[in-house]
Length: 539
Ligand code: SGN
Ligand code: CA
View (spheres, rainbow, N blue to C red):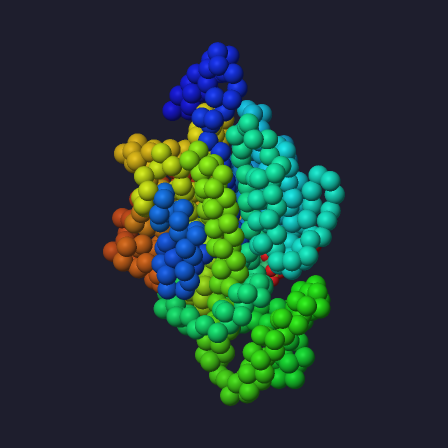
């Protein structure tokens, strides 16, 4: 199939020489790759509308395909982005965590498409520590970026733009689409939101509305991790203990001190002060009008709260701000989709909506990600391609962020390098799932010891099971029966009834590690590099 993907480009080249550039270029699809940061599939109404309506993001699935089993190879920001760009697992591209710099000798698919005549642009969050290669134009946030009055890095230098980040990234994207791009070339556009990344600062129009709402609690909010191993119990991402009252829940530091709320470090207070300190006078005024009364109410409630009351209150505060951020993403995605329609670009443009990973919205009492458990391993994926994807289709195949690079290269009629590890999604998009043969996906998380204390682990998922090995300072195995235990509450690794499954999955895991070139000795090399690196800066 890879050699086959050369033929369209050969035919196209023939066509160029006979009939000129324009006609040919029309046939190669444009790609708009929309990715937000930490957007859980639980917060997209195309998946379910318990928490929020996202009518604009949903349009992509209504007019295209919704993937219900899409996952990432390593549930953390920069490694996911490196996998998307290279089509390789982290142990090969080397960006195994958020801290090691991206090795720019890697060849990325935008570089290849650029060489093949695509115009390339990127707006928003990349989080690589270095600038993207192969782009005609980019304006990216430094590191995690800011919600209010963000700075941007571009080829022309740094600049700060007043306003709300999700609106600004969209303005830049639309300005490029309308006024800056060369209209006779196909384009590859990365439209990358910072939202809804921690610490979840919504725009005034949305916090006014969302702070009035109450959201349903997940079934596992009060999880005590009894059915799992050491790693779940030791992770530091609980709403009750690790979500900060100030930076995350927006209680002013003075109010927290007055109430005698102690936190393990003053980090949450410092972050809140620095974020609040970025506001203009007008933004502060608007903020205080809404969050002032929330603080007053909390002053009254807090003295009478027990742990479960506080957990419930934190969950509501969390959801109000997190979902408020998503409301702005959805509105802005609508602006871009509208422009594609109005300009006539829609018909020949592939639109993708995804996130760099999933996220916990109170499930298992958590926020953040990193684990191979469903909420963080799975990621939203919606794709529209008029004329190729049948509107309203759904795929439950196990696709991964690893697959974007080969998919887009094939769509553009470009040869897929042999060392790319993903599979082109083309058979699924074209409605021929019988040509899709993958029966398992591989996962590997590395950033430990580190922020949120999620232990190193790798694992395999099939449609029925998930087998996980936690290593480094423990040596523990977990097996989950996906069909009978969808919330992954009971590790059945030692249950005699699953003896054969354990045997079969262990072999499969061994083979998939071999197939992708991962190994115990590579694990040790990454641990060694990690130790040599010494002090780690997490952001
Ligand atoms: C920040 C967050 C963490 C988060 C990492 C990684 N803390 O450090 O909660 O896990 O980013 O996120 S924050 O309060 O400073 O935002 S990632 O999406 O970039 O991988
Ligand atoms: Ca992320």
